[in-house]
Image (cartoon, rainbow, N blue to C red):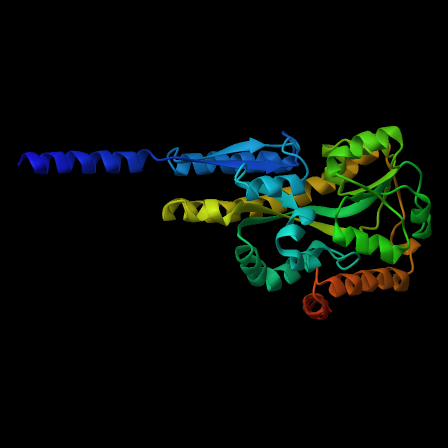
Length: 334
């Protein structure tokens, strides 16, 4: 009888310990506190905390306090962080074919982006898992423009500028090589200072990002023609994710997907609002589609794609499938 009582007590203690077991996700982002992205991600954390009854919480490191995206991914690999909200540069380090969705001058609007992404998403998720990450949610930073100190009136004008290149970004390197431009490679965390000192005079960013990072205060001109649609994702290390109880895994996946849907809507909405904000602050818009020859734009796009295929960063067949899906969509719209 005494043994049975001891056993019961031990079982009760074990069950209580399991019920009280909690997990903290150390989660980093370049997005500053108070930005659209971090506001939505904070809401996500609150929802996860509430629905898990406090068993799963987030600890955030926003605004680049954990370094550039390569630094974040290195810290995730060593267990110092568990997850991050990353852009295409970081995504390329996990599963580079995903960045076909960021090919220069490929998409004209968000409807095209959404259609092609839906076609590719199953293999993208599988690619993340294969490389030891779980893709909890998809997001984007929006259509990327050139912000400059002096006006850009043509593609040739770009060659006269000191343009920032995100250091170590293969897609950016391919684009600039195809365009005949010699950029200035820097970590994103050094861009604002470099704009202030004149080391660079031109940056690439979506309108919302240029405002959030205050780059627009140094660059009074913005091109209307978008270079590409900047992608992003909410990721977590498989090692951490797989160690969570099943119910918390399901909670993260469900709420991550809900958060990503909200992020897409809010980011697109705020990028539109940002155009008005930029105008009110005196930013002049230059270089629209009417100012460029489409043949030259497409030559740059296809040459960049060919270079990325040679390196295996974005295989040719992935690019061709994306183009096929895009053509399908455009035919349907006709």
